[in-house]
Length: 189
Image (cartoon, rainbow, N blue to C red; front, side, top):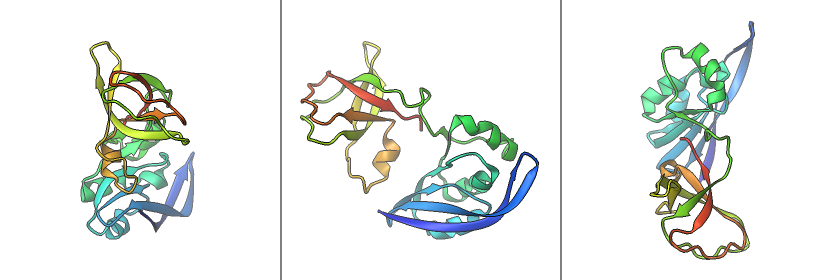
């Protein structure tokens, strides 16, 4: 996995003031797939740096105009969803009043752990806490039923994009039978 830096220049505007700024855009990924962090000023240099790779998501770290003003043209150019925290929606609407981000960046419950049932048996965990990418669906008893994604390889971005929760395996956690209770952290992507 690599990290690339693209910079763009433009105007940061807030509360009636304007300043010339240079913004960092981070591209994280590999030769096939990347995630773009922020979309500042001009989408063309970002598209050039992506260089034909699949963009799994455009993650906006916050809603200041100089971090989002190239987001919609970038989305159109690379066909990737825009993720922005709901608390920054009013800033988004000032720049893009006729458009919307595709997904919220954080869970609706602001990261509170929930309890779910594991759809598969899980082995005992080792000495490190482990966050397994997983998908969830509503179980018959009303609890989420979670299934780890097919690959937990951190060099692959598509399993992260597929996941809608993290299954939390505390350090030293015992094996969990299918249907056993597990803590999860929902992701609202």
